[in-house]
Length: 183
Ligand code: PRP
Image (tube, rainbow, N blue to C red):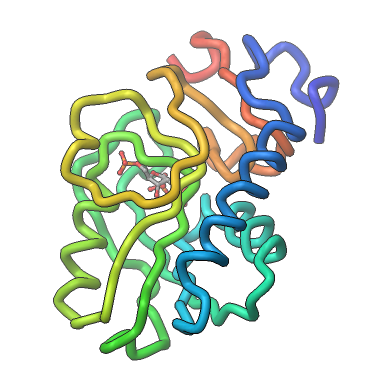
């Protein structure tokens, strides 16, 4: 899927495929250095984090186990419903493990606030977050996020895992959706 396939739905390209790749290179190098000899577990948050998990993990020099959670707070709307639900839990016991949650985006921070509290109660050795994007909103302050790809504006963005009503996830870069599409 590319800009042509988007028709006129996209207002602008925000982060190109090349920029994402370069930033993931940097995040992977930092991850390799931080977790050398510690056997970390990568936890992807479905569905949005599929692309970050795939592309970040394949850049690592260590072999990293992966597990998945499915959490939803958005439904098909443009705004958070405020209710976080676990749709699929981990199949790994994370007690004593070094856990890194991979996310596509931190927006209101609601999803991660819930997830961090939930996973922390399972007594991992450490717990942090790798997110490709973080929106520049005040709610981020208390989210311990070790790896951040990009700070981004508070626009409605899609692509690279981010959807609107389940569409546009497979766009290989990140773009801003035209307001008339989601309003
Ligand atoms: C998206 C995204 C994050 C979350 C971030 O997931 O993948 O998990 O929203 O938003 P927040 O910081 O405001 O909580 P969503 O619930 O839309 O599910 P999806 O990954 O299946 O698209």
